Length: 305
View: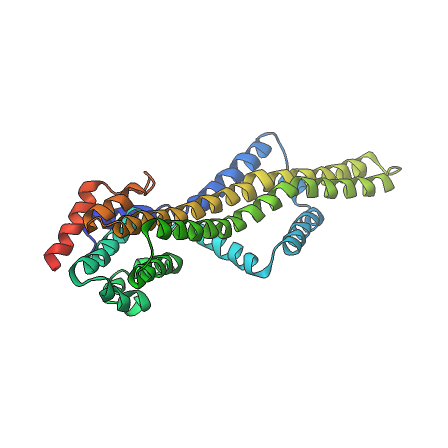
């Protein structure tokens, strides 16, 4: 199934935001270093390798101490994903609604048992395989298939299904919040590590207290660079990146909420079009398709059928 030119333009627009983090970082650097240069400062003064080693090495060490390997891998993957840009857009949600409608139509046309082959192996399913962009969100497809499998088995009330999905979403939320939380803690520690570097610099300065004023001034300046770096890296880069990861985790959780709304309404006996309307209403406003956009997608499916 082909994405229309209008929806393709949305996708191109999303790809245009992939450099936003890098652009923001450049703006931060230009603002701080540009202001420093305008005041007559020399960039060579800021090139204190020892301060970078003390602060950066301590931060990496603290990260390794507090973070299990599994979470550390997630942090790396999330940061790389953030640099590439979010994969979730209005097009993603339109595809999700379309997929859900097709799946729900199967239950209405052929009965619940007809879903079994689709949910057991979604990669080989004639329905799921038409949405390769959604198959990239493995946890989303797994969440949907696990719940639909329970509905196929039968004997579970709709409110019990809703409660089970809430448990799954909460578990996913806690897991998804860990990378941002860890980075936030590292960001909070950076000013303190900058002070550590500055104190060590002052200790070295005190050893040369009998030297010429120029030497003492140079050492004091080097020590103060440590404080600057700690605060600058924390508030200029690490904490904003942690917030970005938190927002990305919320975007992923919203996909699960939309799936929950649709499946629960289906379990309560609503027809497929009403069920995906429940799902649409659960989508955040930034990415929520209009009813007309959703209706156009549904009509495309009916034409193909």
